[in-house]
Image 1 (cartoon, rainbow, N blue to C red):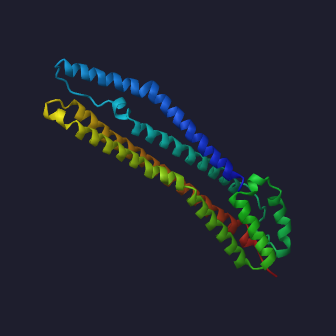
Image 2 (image 1 turned 135 degrees about the vertical axis):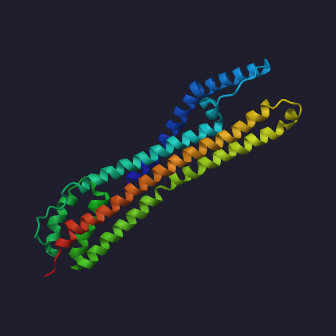
Length: 265
């Protein structure tokens, strides 16, 4: 398990860099040029004295730096959650296999544990570090040393609970991103309102274009940030559900396929 931590950290850094490059490239080539063209057209029509109804533009809503930052963090969160879902799916495949092959009615005695431990110990280090092999090995080793089935059940439960705590703690970065995105949106709100107040004298003179543009920044940034935050929170709860089911199914697998076969003479 320790070998996975540096790789996961490296994956997070690389995914953040890719998200920054990708989102900024889209903004530079698509979002901001289209938004500037729409705003220039509106300014020209206003200067010419045309009366028209401004349509809400997707590009104008997304054009500011706060929205760009929110999308960068969104892609980063997606990458982190995708990596964790991939790991959970990989671990779930072990539940469909037969790591412990026991026919119905077969009993396991304490002296038999070494025989059943060999296939688990023969797994490659990556597979052996996953939850199910660790729980099964711990159960067999505890049964060999204590000759007590209740102690075996307690050992499996402890490993599953510690794994659940670990999985939950590793979601701290996603939780931070889900908190940071609305905060960035509120920064855009404060910036937009501040700019609008700075141009209040123009509104008094009859020119409200600058004020409305600044208020647009204020409300657009908050709107985009809140929508993205809702999406991330939904996906994070789905990820938590997948991980919790994995832990519960692992505990059931150990109880049903191993512990119930253990007997002491």
